[in-house]
Image (cartoon, rainbow, N blue to C red; front, side, top):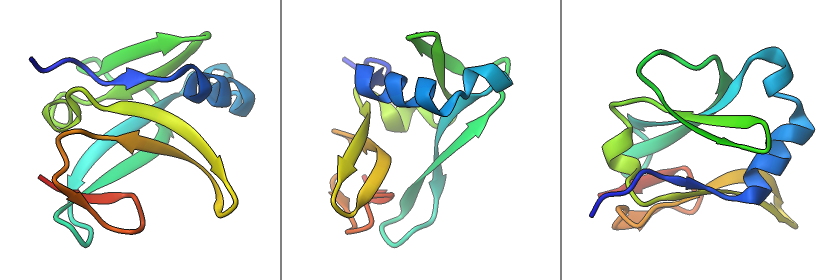
Length: 107
């Protein structure tokens, strides 16, 4: 069963630190063709559109457009802080492989 993506508390907390909601923006997660594995994630602060799926928590919003939604079914959107840097990450069970950069994948 395909469920919408889930956003972790840590990701919502990071968005609150950034102050995205104060500007009327949300974290947009999109899937586009390209990258070294066929598809790539586009992650940006953006204004929600009418046909977006809106996921809310801690007063913050994460949005996914209707075209990207099937590619992100059952995915988990998180925020990771590691020695190499801090970033939003997507754990996507639909991806059959991913490249080392973490933003490109294949299905």
